[in-house]
Image (cartoon, rainbow, N blue to C red; front, side, top):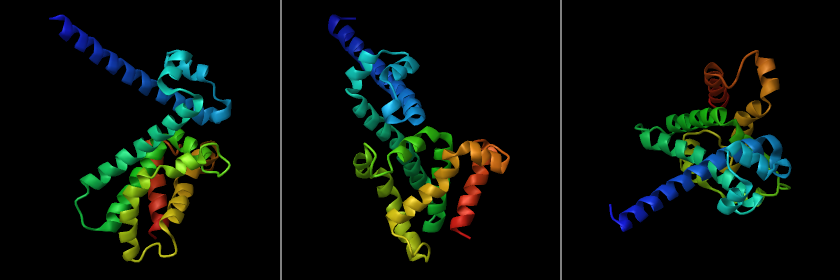
Length: 210
């Protein structure tokens, strides 16, 4: 192996390590920000959880605010990737059937990634530090809105705009998970269990499509 090839190999390994480190930091930051919120979260706590250093986090992400933005993007990407997969694999021409599958995927993703919902809910108030930043991220809108428009043409949700419906759906799906301790007591079960997710999905769909 010549020197140039060795250098390229080291460069590739370095990029792979950097990518893995950044992903580990994002996953750790997601947990800490969801639990503590932006102001109470500490970069050193995130670094300890990620098994890295404070300086390495600032090297990759800069400030705590920039890391928070990266976490928001990371969370939204989880949702958008799974919704795109549903659209890609859907074979029927029935928009209502597709919309139900999108909602079911949304419920499942929220239940399996509750920290993402908490991060987003922290920023749904106009007083939030990153409210404007969150409003600019339209990944989910671009996937859902075309299907929603077709569903409206089938006679559903006539009293809603697309944005209003997303707010309504957000509350319907995510609020029971956000207050999970109370929800589990009231339902006498675990809403994040496999059975609990299936029941939550069924209730949401039955409510929207009686």
